Image 1 (cartoon, helix red, strand yellow):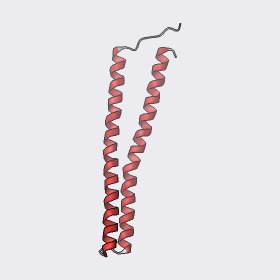
Image 2 (cartoon, one colour; image 1 turned 90 degrees about the vertical axis):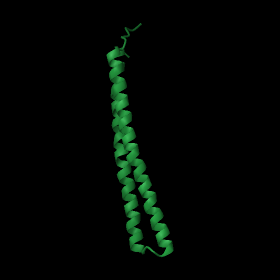
Image 3 (cartoon, rainbow, N blue to C red; image 1 turned 90 degrees about the horizontal axis):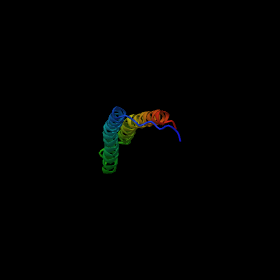
Image 4 (cartoon, rainbow, N blue to C red; image 1 turned 120 degrees about the vertical axis):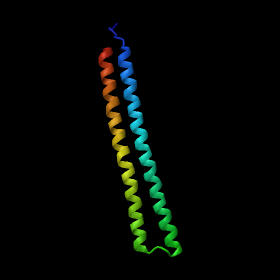
Length: 103
């Protein structure tokens, strides 16, 4: 059998703190994403309702659509980077734990 080393209590606490920190960053970026999606649908709603009612010209409708898409992109980008960073950190932690255990 391989010599399996136990993970120390301090390592477990550090691991739990890293995971909690990762969760907090994900939640923060999820809030930004939710606000971006809300703004996108708000722009679309105002644009479509305003255009069909005759209050909004086609030029303003185009600007509203671009503003909605821009807000959606601004909401998505931080979440994507956060998810990628979190995945890289978890892969690094897993590889370090496997090295400690001798796997």
